[in-house]
Length: 270
Length: 358
Image (cartoon, rainbow over all chains, first blue to last red; front, side, top):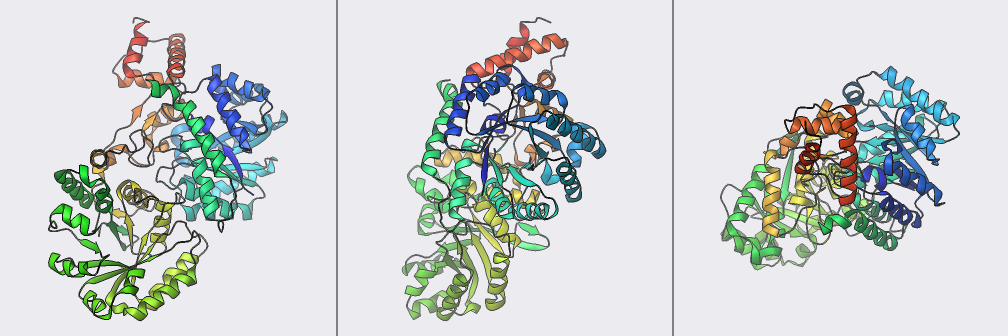
């Protein structure tokens, strides 16, 4: 069973040049919801302004998809998400030594402590938490397992393995998912980038290794070379499953066109 | 040999020239020649060509290695005249050849192509087919078996088994020619090379017929960056090659195409801008300069105060703005970018801060 998490409205929108207003985000969310997508990562409420308003509005629509938001590992970000009354709060935890040293300018112990504080704070508010390990594919395996165990012990049910720089390859994707599943009782999500053209294959390999949640974007939009393309992933799932049709591509291809028309509408006019 | 991975030599066969023939009417001979030289400089070991390429090129350039794809019996003669050392024959075509034609083949280095039709490769099926080929042509006459159409990665041993079995049984080199029908061609090729294949067939940008194949630039960079392979080619010409490729074909390479898309080193979000300012390694898998590109900070809805400060630095403007003023600038950037659904340009930014008159 694979559940799709659409991040067109978060990581997709982070791509330089994609600038969505409130009504654009609402229209796109409705279309994604109409496909029966399990979860929509709707954006980053801590940005404030129209971004936060669009997520609040999305929550008022009663969509079937679960709505989640992306948060840095700090209480202030999380408070903005709680204001929006979203279904799932995603807490992004930088885990590689490069990110911890150069971006956070902290150490591993600080990360573990801060992560625990944020998880406890959010869970106390009664909101489902998903912890995303940022730059997981450059993180030492032992530290990753240590974090998974810590997260699981706090009652979190799902983690997301983020290949932030797109440097994962299928064998590693498969093996890592399998090993985590064997060692920690927790659900796994995969979030990949397409820097070397391997995003779809890495997602497929992760599913075969035990990942249940796969992040995608329509048109494969996203930072740098983008994220795992939604329709390409569906096509690959169909092709690698003895041609058993898991997903109906006709409708999602139509939806992709509608979404990309919204994203690029005014750019075309210019 | 342009690549060395874990001490093993990896060869690249490129078939971009074949694909360029689709645009034959509009191709500029000198540009094609230049592009071919660049393909060689980047790391192509062998050029796969056919009779159309030969005619277009009006012969063959020296100091290049060619593999001629044979599709008609009289082309075997042509190979001899052209002094081509390597020929490529599809398995089905081989079966149709007469005994004397098969004898003629033996003066060349031979590559036999086996096409896999199904999405799910059948391990025993491939081995049986290779065995049948061996009945037609001794394996000591065959340099390489190309497996065409691999479209998936095998993480649980199947591919390793296939490679071991073929190599043990037939003592032959293996080439992977992936199919991109499931959008996994580069990964399938990358995976195959790690599981014992000796060479890979690619095209620049991955365009190849209606389904596509592994992209040359993705294969070279992924082996270098992810696997630490020694790349002997000059990767700094990739951006130039992209431009020339667009000129030749009249096609626009997608802005976020892996490796060569013109937008892949543009960054906007506050988090990425902050990370890249501190150390580009945080959010870039390789240096843009290494492939002849540059990074560019863009301003838009996702920018933060750090981005504004960084843009001021980039433009050589002293940051004399208070927090309050930076907030104002940021709000205006966000408003303008959402309204236009596009980034705020440097000119627009300069105009915007001009309002504050420092």
